[in-house]
Image: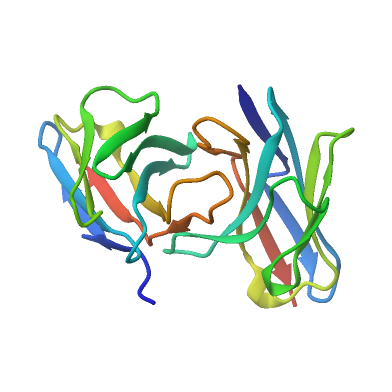
Length: 114
Length: 114
């Protein structure tokens, strides 16, 4: 079966701009989570969506937002970009969002903010 | 609250030698524990997970980990390292109830020398 797809893979933006990243989960997987990965902070949880509803949220400012569509595809948006937002953004999906379900990660979107 | 400590940001072994990557966790509730591997320019791939069944967990690529509650540890081992094992390894802990959102360690880079 097809894996998790993230688009675009690479993105360069300037400070103050906004960006939208997309994630298409494995077919049938309804839980989509987003993570930010940086050398300084490691992997940090942004938010999780399940059946179009935000189910959990990490400790990030309101500039970071997301949504999920009826086909489980998810987008995350970052407004008013800052240099510190440069990171690898990973999305991960699970079939039903249970604790024992395996989480499958996409390859990530590398965002560079200049 | 939960946290993960991975001892050693870099571990270097010779091909054929034992691999031991250390992970200690803290959790206020019984945990689920995971090991992931990340190759360059790729997302994370699940190696194995502990979800309160057998304490010795076998994963893919010959890796295994043992859950030791008394030591709050979940160290990852492999009897014989291959060059292809060179990658970044992440330990993660998640609560066994509630949000199931994992907290990741900072990662250990495994270097394999010929």
